Length: 478
Image 1 (cartoon, helix red, strand yellow):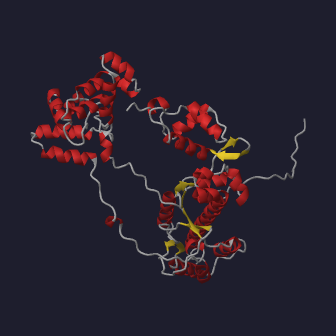
Image 2: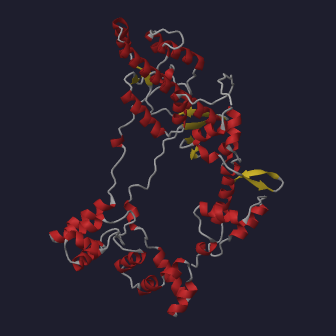
């Protein structure tokens, strides 16, 4: 056997993820808040990056234009790539490339401070501790009461046992039980209960009327009450269904989650990435750049680089050149992200123009490929663009992913978007007789009469997604 060495020339294609491409992909899928955090972090770590002060130029472009070839040429020029040159023209760069890498003008009016617009709402704990401090209790009882309040969840239920609290405070269980009863008399009614049954019974006890029957229903027949099995309750208590209905009516007015009245985390605030306005017969798209730092290269490092050239400090030049390249890539990546969001939003508006004109019933079936083909990008890019991005429209604020829907067949017609079908189901249920609600099969028949072919299990799935109960639990007896 003979071993020999040979040289072979082989031509292959391979995808190389350059650092710049990786950064662009990372920025593209970030939400607005995450993007601001990333920019602020880069501002801290890269001394060549500066946030440009906002000017007072009244002109504002809808989206700044970016000449990719010009940026690439300028990048090679300032980083010394390709021709071996180490120097570059700072004045030319700073003149040509301002915030976001391009000349970009906008008008900013100082908004009132948030402190002038927001008020701090009392939390559940604050509200209960205020009542505790006003109660006639000993210091030991007050400590126990604070421990009870500290162990309430957001719904207002006690998550620790009286034995655990007694062990922590070093007191008798009977003392904890006494303080718990006093806390349960605080506002809101039903607070500090250990389960749903106790929560409802506390509220019934605090009412002035004689509510022995509702209390009996809650105490012994809560499961039947949840399933609206009034017949079984009437049979067990040997009373009429009318009496059960009246008791159920009282119980339905109680609050099963009293703590939610003071829940601080119920609201979700969304800052849209895109604004869509109707001007005449056309829709105008404007990117929301409020709060996004406008970046530029620090003019201070012009002198530093000049001194480094004169003193031949190679380490200094290398450091500044690397940071300059990183800053340039970041500026261009942010600019490219904004352009991509704009193009995708523009395509979405064009595809869903009937939705913007007429409402959700006219939302068209649309998949990622429809937009990808239109803007000549890959589907994965469209998926990243639409993730965690929101659009403010004349019809409300929607996540960009909202406009992508599967299609439902219509008899003899084009497909209809699944979101439109959900809205039709919601409308059908909202118009039903509450004493004779439609079951899923009846909804299928109604939709079929409107030309929409859909299976019963699909109706059930959409109904659950809408948070609508089945017909047996929607039925009202009074």
